[in-house]
Length: 467
Image (cartoon, rainbow, N blue to C red; front, top):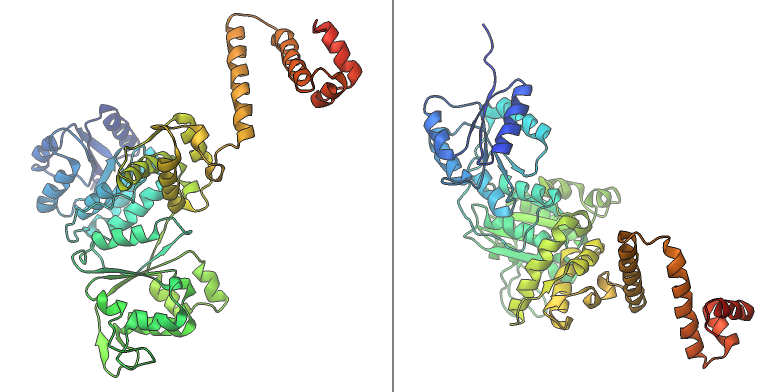
């Protein structure tokens, strides 16, 4: 009996995308059929569904997300790959909640798309629909088009129906708390509390009480019962930032809570049970900390169920312009002023800067520029050196070299060569006149300013007719 060929259908209003995918699929031995609109696919699918579906998000008429919802009712086991040029967190979460097998931002690698089709077909029997509680609230500050950020969005989308423990890693200022909030907002716990605590910002002797609370009289100054962060987050999410700085004793208590979902307040005798999803974050290498006996290995494995890495800004430079414009608008709103725009050259300077403080530093830069830039358009002269701007000497150097470049371009377009026959004498005249004016005509001093000997200056002045 002949084995039936794999079938993949494509829905996209872009004819070139349909053509490229159809050709690639057929070359891979996969039967393909394409549709310009989602409505046309729904008509065809009544007669029989494909093995895999590839769909765009934004199309005329029915959108790809609406198509997902419709297919989820009638064809819940159909693996669907979502492709889109509008690759943001909202689309990623909506795609996974709609039951998407994978989310692929444009422009995509055609071989990767074909491999995904094969993988989706192989796993179709065991694929679980990501159908967590619907919550379309967007976290606007968590934005980006870079591949590294798309992977973060995909991870959030995959976890949207889950309450699994997550470890978020990344440098300071990369938005780890924003990722934690997005995980909470797109989870079944979204209507319950989100409680955040920076464990490194609280003295170690106070952190235990902060986490677990205390009873009245538990220690000097404990004048009343205090509810800790775990109790505050009951039913919701507790975000523990900088978890790597936690003391060994507290690591032991935290491990017990994660394992048993219960704890005692400081000075308390009664155990308290809670239902809390823990999301931890660190800018440290916890695996190394475990090897160096600074962090409990069993706690590390308990926290590291799912890991999401937030990329530094220097690894997602294509997002810098998007982030700058977003935060310039936000800064203007906070300061009750009009939003400043930024010219191309100034933007290039900011895109070339390494941003050691990551997004947090960029946010501060937009606030500073909103206050300090005198005009409505931010120019290179407005960029401070600590954000990658040029110092005054560099700016002056740039001004005359740009003028020289424009002059050379005009001469070459007119066929006036060689350039040095004209440029060098004029260059030397400018230097001589400026140095002579500075020294009130003293040739010895003027020669030193230029970097020549006195005889060289005299010879140059004679040949250039500057006597």
